Image (cartoon, rainbow, N blue to C red; front, side, top):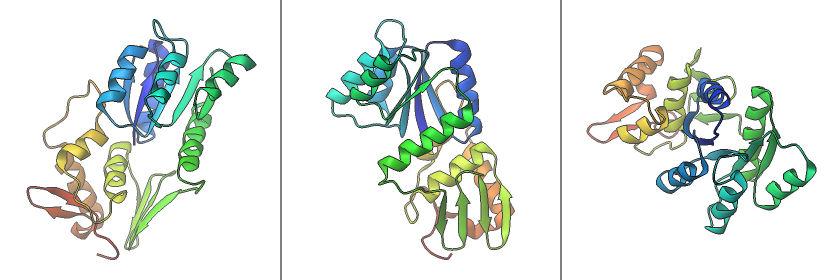
Length: 222
């Protein structure tokens, strides 16, 4: 899952980038409102974490313009401003949730899951299952034909990208976009190495290769 973090504080931003990455997310970090808006025009994100107290253009102004443009990307405001008026204003402008700093990462992750559930009709999706393949979205444990392992964040992100589109070919560039954020050097063989690791653990049938096009998870039982 690729998310956009718009946060000007370097310590908070770095901590969030690391923690969210450890949770299997790819994080693009914009340090001000203008850069955040530019990122939203270039990429599609599952969710935006938006600080309100940004230099120049405030988080509320970014949110207001986002909604006026018809962009419905989920937005969670993260801010140190804890007065009632600010919380009400943020929600009225179209924020999906509002979290006061400082906060625990467990709560932030829970709120992200809750926002995404609401956007999907309130269904609490905690695992993906396709045939003999099962992926637990909270524990990062994958099970296939009786073999079960907990995945690292990057391997989890790759398998999730494939399992979200069973039966569809996912290209190398699409997978790389799910694995890397801004400023990260993309290793030329990273996707191949991760897929080789998964196949070594579970067998080659877990992922189907379409030569020259990409990879896919077959629908139903392989």
